[in-house]
Image 1: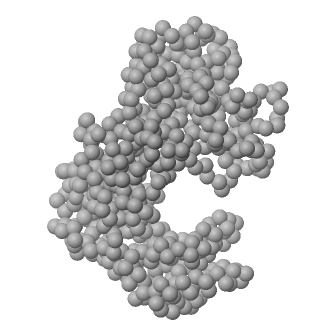
Image 2: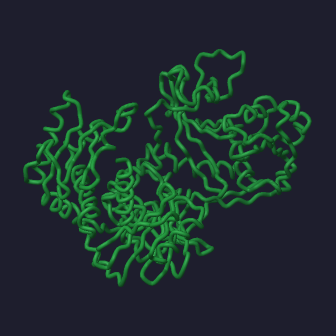
Image 3: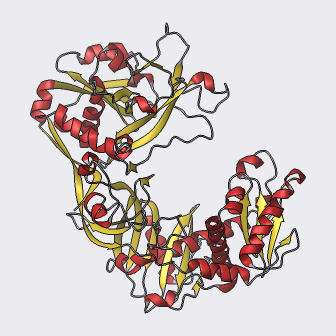
Length: 580
């Protein structure tokens, strides 16, 4: 069995009703804003146990029994657009009741872990995440969504003085003071306006905290640890009122072997067989950079690489230019590049130095060029031997982008086609594609990918907010091994490609870091993908091997069958042609 972040909640409604009063606050306006002051007033002035936000038109506040009545709450909020009513615990939606108890952790001093219930959310901080100069500090936003999935999102609180006055969203951002005890609260009118924080990071800087670190000294500073710790703490603090646990999945199959071990050689042979031109779209002051790149490319391909020469349709072009941010308010030469031949872009700011210094990065570039060549010229998968899988007929893969449906049909020998719709209603001459197109419309799911085999079995793959968690025993180990035995015991479901089902028979899979040569850090959780059978049988097992490649996602297996990489590349080429 594998542990997931989806919660199983049990409540003693009678005991909760004897100890707490819950009120629902609803607005007649369009919605209650995330940073609305009414979400902080109850905790500040009436000492609410917790306040949480129900995305949309309502929020919920929980008070110790008898501490406040509805009339007091109405007077305090003093807003004619708001209506307030008592909410019995048994009538409170499960995810909101769980959120109220989660946010109530802000009332306790828990070792060095500090909780803040502000803006209807729960933020957790620890001293090691705070800069010594006090200019900013990291935090984890701990949340429970409507499907009872627990998450931890890394975020930053920054001194407002560090932002330009015109920074987008700054004027509307709630302001907070950091108290001596490490807690945050909304600023008051008579507060000193120095050292005021907003929940915002500096432009261009991402807040990152690892999902899991396989070091004894670091593992208890990770998202996975705190997700487990929070649930343990909830059960301890509210024993007799609730019992919350993580749901489990049954694992059916694991794939741990790479499929693409020979893709480097194939892509190098493909690119070497073409005339390759390096085009510099940089200014004169960067004239040495294309020459440096030209030298390493020539060495790899064992042939001369022309610089700034004309390119024919059968040629391959590597374009060196600035990134998208550089061309803000300027003409972006990317939009003028021809899509009739293979063109691969390398940006000066983000990719040039890595491409020059790292042969692995260049191998990735050659694979990208080979895929583009397969799409534009070969119309066949040459990066892999598709016949190896022994498929008896065609496979269909489809996705939607900007309300337009795209499909890829792959024949048993690896030849493929990207059928185009026709007419004002974007219909297809093939009735199968019309059926698949309608199926994509019918399901309101995240990140939909549709797959069909030659037998007519149709499956829909969609992204969830669920992911697997490590065995909690790992947090008490004196040393952490990355051996297969250790991975099977403590990291079951987090490594390699895994197929699961739950008690109701629903099918899921994920694809994570490779167990062989596994790195000591998992930067992000491996999201679970749900497989919905639209027609016929579940066919995900037949194409699970198509995810055991690492050319799509560096050093990790891909989360979707690799033909989707081809389809999305075609979608980019097709979209770029529309820019010309």
